[in-house]
Image 1: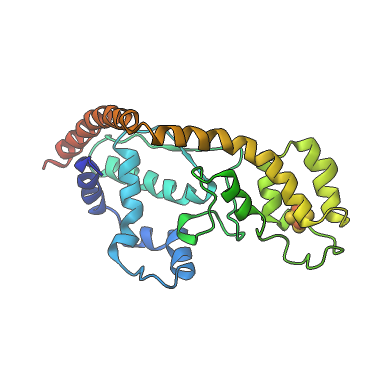
Image 2: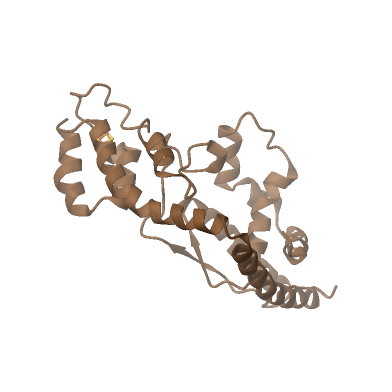
Length: 245
Ligand code: SF4
């Protein structure tokens, strides 16, 4: 937000972005349905994907690492870039999505993981906090009693197993154990935590260490700011020249 170039490009791109492109954005519709306690009928919320487009296009990114739920945003970014290039001149690179091996991470309530939904496990969470979030996590809703067989294909805990638990253990213990009621959901979550915590703990420790040395964080931010400012300024100049403003 220190780089005003993003806000400027956002304004300019919003002049060429048709409103129906924004209204059909699935996240816009989904969050309006899910976050009923917030007033989301504002221009800021509707136009937010244009700001995201500006954040990407200003650096002429060729690839953008995103979760699968962000692909529609990236598609909108591509459409805006194409439209600008067509109307003015070829300033923008058309970026492509770079999906990870695990393009979707479920939240603890089974919906997509999102800070807005209050269902996220944070990299800043301690092992105790992660455990406290995973233990009551939503599972296959049809598995009511311990003796009921479950279906890992519809269980968000199993989606996390796909990320953290080795395939062989998943295929030979978790999947069949769930389907035959051989293991209970609490045991299953215990296995998940055994694999999840060793991955998250070093990240948490590193974060804690950095929190005690804010000068290093500040240095990294300053360095990033200087490099970003140069690129963002150059792109914005090209945009203004193309638009003759
Ligand atoms: S056993 Fe595991 S995969 Fe099966 S429903 Fe319970 S938590 Fe989900």
